[in-house]
Image (cartoon, rainbow, N blue to C red; front, side, top):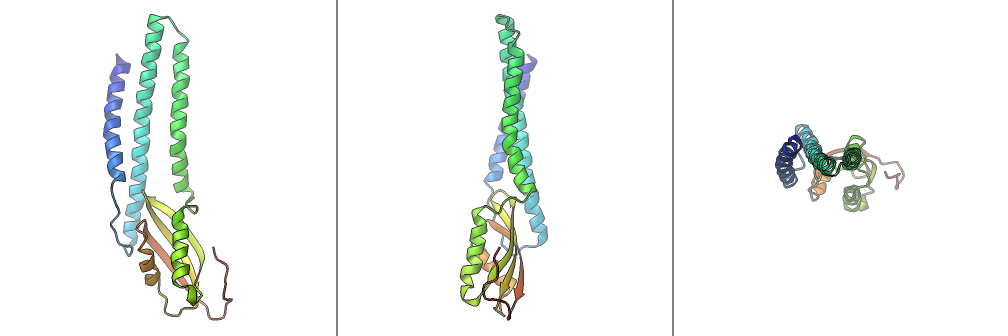
Length: 201
């Protein structure tokens, strides 16, 4: 009876959290790219909120699954006398929890370790800067990209250029065509005597 009640409660919680999780992913970023650092912190908070929702959702789904397994073990032991079914269901439940937790750990680890440099948005940033200023010998010398929300990224880049008029605002406006880039920190270094093709990062 307790297992059945726990299953009902977990299913209701899963339904609520599932709807909240879908609503969070349905939110589109309509912010400009010239916002202040407070907005950046707000996006970071939103991302943690997304992961918290996902972990809570996985938690109640895992509880519901283990409740089902417990009911199966109880019924099997009561009707057929299968005492071995209880530990087997326990192992099955532990395996399910481990598999579901693995994906969450991988996703969280990417954020904590800033492992977003293989995302296509990195190439998009390079393309915008290099192609727009190709005739002015402008190169990216340092670039870091990290995720700050669902489908939202921030970047910090250093640019080496021979263009005496280039400003950080110019590059920020050019990056604005990519809506997923919600924050950009840009540093410009000017060089009149360096080589024409400095190393690119």
